[in-house]
Image 1 (cartoon, rainbow, N blue to C red):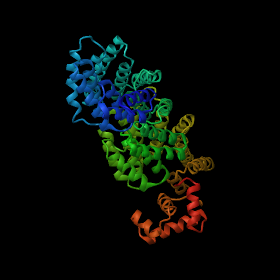
Image 2 (cartoon, helix red, strand yellow):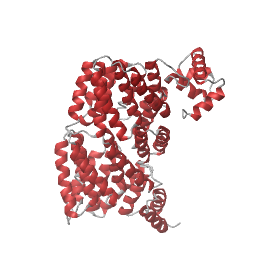
Image 3 (spheres, rainbow, N blue to C red):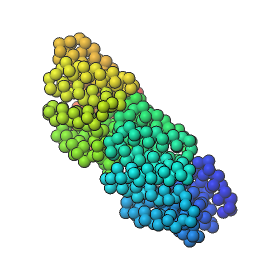
Image 4 (cartoon, one colour):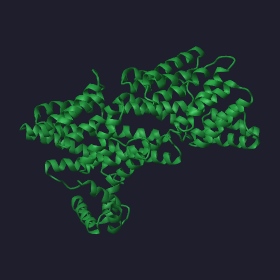
Length: 540
């Protein structure tokens, strides 16, 4: 194929969003005879979306040099701005700063003003937000929006309104922030926004909706992200984050087997080159593993997530709480909450309440609950209302107020049930059952506990099921402890007791005891039968 035909094929593939072919053909044309600046920008886009970050930065840097050499100041300013944005996205804070003044200086020399004068202001405004000045950054983004509107630049307008939403989130102004995100997502749906900022917008708003307890928006925006990714089957960047976020929502919706599959896909796309999934893929994988009782695997997933700049909380602290490491869990969650911005802190507070209650400090739990309620605002979202009601029930029960706990627990159950979140609904029912039991309504209480047990069993929520069975004092066949689940999973891989012991740092004798307990609880007699049970029940 000639250089010209490769270039034509690359341009056509990029127009159709066939990024693998676009990258291959444009790279071929570039290697053969070089590319013009605009085609180098296209090559950079294709490389970025294929997970080839280094190649993307190289192509865009060369596009900048070509624009400077040809005295195309507008092209040079545009590529300088995008280079800064690429490097910010990739976390290369050591190099992006050199492009900030360069883009602004070049834009000042453009003969005919255009929206590039707004684009070059985006990276400095992001830097201002990152430096801890969300209010000042929000004002800068308003100015950029005005420039975008003046020149009819829909993409720049979407970037600016989305970025202003991020500022408002940090300022604790949820309602206007989410209105900004609505506008940005609508711009993506209209096709006003290029692929790279579209991916950033869609991934970020889903994360923010989940952290902000806005369940309806999280579901709607996750669908938008799914649809956008499906239209680009060659996409690598953003695809892992898509599956990680889908896993989180599927957990909430009670589709845990699908959530596990989505988490596995997120990890595979991370390995394929999706830099965006470096935290989300292992963290949400850890969440599924923790809830199912695969404690060893969950710990490893959280460890990988923690190797990034983000803290794997509240998942890791809740895992340690379930392992009986209450002091460690408390230290971790309080350290994370104290260092977080207001928005992130609020997302951690329900876990803080639970850990403080378990630690036997209802006073600290009450203070945390009060803060959570205050940060929820006068009209909290339905999801946050359910979380607050559950936390209130936990605190009241710990304080000895069974009647008050019953009212709050029932409100929690109603809230989670209306949202279609079965696991949290079942946790609320456990509190209802405990409160009823404390009030002398043993039969009604037992009915609630039995209902919760059925949900936990159907989901494969082994730790919650084991904890409930301990509470009831009636261990039934098929209920395994988290450690037994770990041993069963390893038995199903064909490992001997000695090999399992080495993997879990247990003696061979201890493993043999676990295997014996598993056989007894499940009414099984062979390792083959145990393996079949593990596969049939989605434990592996």
